[in-house]
Length: 235
Image (cartoon, rainbow, N blue to C red; front, side, top):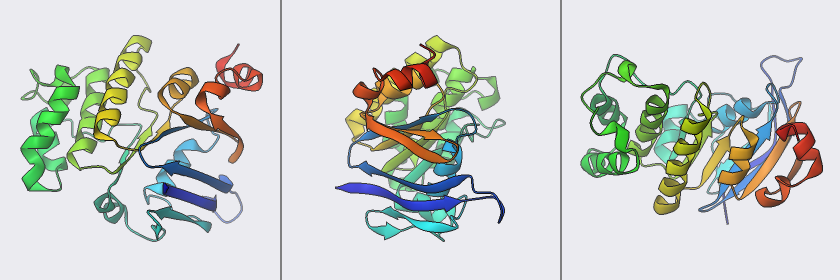
């Protein structure tokens, strides 16, 4: 059963130009799906539309058969759809602990959720009283995901969280994420510029080009597809 259905959405920032053209994707319960494509393909616009930051011109977004089009972003978060943006969304002048505390929507789950965050992201434990702007790039991304966990996500949207990180840090971060989403059984939609990592993390993938879905399939098949190798992996 699909928990997320994006149906034939067209999105544009003005009346003349469409960034997304008739996009349809779906995400099943407990599934990880990635969206790959070159810069400017429309991947981040798709995630922003799902999270309510952008309203589509046409089409619909359904979460558990309920349309989210027209809802405010905070209403969508309350439904359980939590977006980790490319820039992280952390409050730099606050400590790790303070960032986690303010991200919690249900006070009764505060301590339990913090324990989960510290369990999956051990580097944050010793620095929990430090300001967020003192963290390394990788640690800031861990904090960003940690804030999302504090909101009790039922669907996680990850938007290019590897941006600006060294390759080894990215691989370590995704190893932690795979363990976390598997244990918590959180369906996850991943926008990722490093295609090999995206296809390794996800079970299925959609390839985007110029605002359209041009290919889709099992990640294990796409990673060996000659067109994907040539267009996205540089092989």
